[in-house]
Every structure is written in C-alpha cells, then in structure tokens.
Amino acid sequence: MRLLSLEGRLTLLLAAAALSGALLYVGVTVWPLPQVIVSINTWFKLSIAAPGGVGSLGAMLATVVVLLPLASLLAHRVTRPLQRLLRALEGAVASYRDGDFSFSIASHRRDELGALIRSHNALGNTLREQRQNLAQRELLLDTVVQNTPVALVLTDAAGKVTYANIAARHLFNEGRSLHGLAFDEILTGTSESLRKAIASGEDALLTVEMEGSEETFHISQRNFRLQGRPHRLQLFRRMTRELSRQEVATWKRVIRVISHELNNSLAPISSLAHSGAELARRGDTDRLPGVFGTIAERTRHLHGFIAGYASFAKLPAPQPVAIDWPSYIESLALHCQFRLDGRLPEEPGHFDAAQIEQVLINLIKNAHEAGGPDDEVALSVAVVARMVPVGSGGGADGSPGSVRPRARHERNGAGAGAAAVLFHQALRYGPGPCAGARDSRGPWRPGGAGQPRGRWPAREFIPAALNPGR
Image (cartoon, rainbow, N blue to C red; front, side):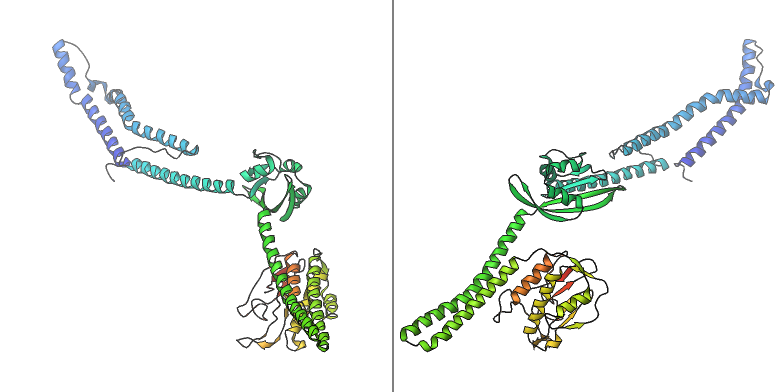
C-alpha cells in the first residue's frame, strides 16, 4: 500500500482521527483539564466540578462536542479536491455528449484519481483525432460527390429526396435544393420516357429532349437499407458526348472497311476496262468476253458486299422468346450441316430465335469454309453454347486450323465479315453484355481464349465472349 494512494491517505486520516479522539479524551479526564480546573478553583475561590466527577459518559460527550467542528472542517478540506474533479468529469461527459472532444482536465495528482484524469485526457485526444479524420473524409467524400458530373439522387421509402448533389439540383430543379421534396412530383415536368424508366426500377439508356436538343442518359438504380430503413440511389449520367465519340469512331471504321472493299473491287475493274479498251483498239476481240466477264464478276461481288451491309443496317431489335432446344436445333439442321456434341439443356432458352439462327448459320458456314472434314464441325449446347470448327491447317502447338472471320467480304462471297458483324450485333444488343477475347494464336481459334461462344441460361440470353477480328 502506497502512502500517496487514496487508500494510504484514508488510513492516515482515520489513524489521526482516532489518535486525536484518544488524546482529547485523556486530556479531558486525566490531564491537563482536571489540573487546570483545580488551579482555577484555588486562585479564584470557585467551585467548578472536575470532569472526573462527571464520569466517562460526560467525558465522551465533551470530546464529541469538541471534535465535531474540527471533523467537519477537516472533511471539507479533504473532499474539496475530489468534488472539483467530479464536477470537471461531469462537464467533460456533457461535452462529449454534445460532440465537443476538445475538453481536457488539468491535474498534478499522483494517486489513482490522477491516473484516471490522464486516461480521460488520452481518451479525449483519441476521440478528437478520430473525429477530425472522419470530418476530413466526410468533407472529401462530399466534395467528390457534389462536384461529380453524374447527377445523384437518394430517396427514402416515401419517395422524399434525402440527398442530391449539385448536378442533380441543376438537372431537376434549376439549381435549387431538392431535400425533402417528393421525387415523383419533381419528375412531372420531365419527359414520359424518363418517368417510365425511373418507375421501372432498372438500369436504362434513353434519349430525352432538353432545351431544344436531345440528351442521352444512362440511369442506374440501386435499393439498399440505410440506418435500417429502405432507400433508393439513382444515378443519371450524361452519355451524349461519349456516344457521339463512339458514333464518330464507328463511322470511321465503317468508312475504312467500305473504302477498302471499294478499292479492292474498283481497282481491278478500272484495270480491266483499260485492258479491254486497249484490246478493242488493237482489234483483239477474242479476249474481250473474258475481260467483260471478270468485270461482271467483280461487279456482282461489290453488289453482294453492299447488299450484305444494307441488310445488316436493317436488322431489327431482338425480340427474346422462350425457345425449345430440340425443335430449334432440328430447324437449324435443315439449313446447315453440323454435329451435335452432348445433350441439350432441359430448360428452355430465352433469346431472339431468328437472329441467333442466322448467327449460327453464318458461323457454321464459315467453319466449313475454313477447311477440314464437315463432320468435325460441332455445336454443343449446355451452360455455354459454342461451335468448334476444325480447319485444315495447324497451329504452332499442333492444334487444328481455325475459323478466322474478318470484317470484310471473302473472295467466294461467303461473307465471313458479315457473320462476325451479325454475331456482334445480336450479342451486343441482346439482354446481356458482350465481351471480346483474343487468343495469342489468332481470333476464334478452337479451344483458345477467342473461341466464339454465347450463353443461353433458362430465362435470359447472356453472351459470353466474342471477337470478330479484323
């Protein structure tokens, strides 16, 4: 037990109190109070009774009367620092409850109360640092959210706006605050297509007319629970510039492909026309039918190329329906020759039957044209429906040859490029996403990463991988 601890101080205080009481009792009953009273009686000829005649009870009563004021004064002086400390702790707790963690207590005590004060101050410093870091992170997050070009609207279960950033306020309320307003009432002044897209609760890409011009938006909607209550987060991203850049890039690619094909056809036609004119000038008419036949063949080739891309441009939007696999595969077998690998799924598919049928016909046709036995062109339908073509050549690792469709018209008019574009169109604009893959040995190699494949689950069509190549 340390003397400076609370226990040591209390022990010393109680021992001092007991010793003081004993000394006072002895002073009253034994010495010096009885002798003083006797001397007074002798000097002043008085008859004051000595305490010894009063008895022990009287002596004790006199001791209590004398010690009570002294004990009260001593208790006040001893407990006054403790009372100040308790008031300081009460104020610190009230400050913490109000969110103010800058309160600290100054003390130089070296007992348990001093250790408590130091621990309290350390706790306050820790909470203050955490509060400052949290405030900095919240400020950074709020700055990022407020200044993002994506309009963000957070609504509660009643449809009231609980949070909206600057972009959302400018988009829906001319820069004014949206907090507490009903989001459905805010949308009354917008287009019907936007209201339907938001009411569906799903992601959507739509074009609306705003301020005399068309704007394309991508809408993302997510439901979650915040503080135990349901909320909906809605993001409105302007896609006009991005889509315009993509459209320009697409037009450039299309123009390059068409220009390449026109050059491939017009250059031989121009050369043959010059040769025919020279033969006619020389009078060598026997060779003119061959020249004209070649010109006609190149003209038909160019016409087929243009007609193929014209039919692709008229491709309608996919109309997914439930597909029975056995009857669908039997219908596909009437148009092309292939070998069915494995069993068909029991659950029906869900996709556009006509478009996917045209995709598979073109791909199987390209597989036959790649070379190899016809009975080795296989189609398997499981979790992934894929076509495994086998060519006549072989890779560096001994793998069989590959189908290599290009985004151009082939010499024999088969249209491998049209198949690739059609495949890309049907997969990209179906219900699911489309991803590209390329194997290091070339696109669409059997067994490689670039093998063309499409996934048909029971209720939706989700393309898995595609790389039309170039």
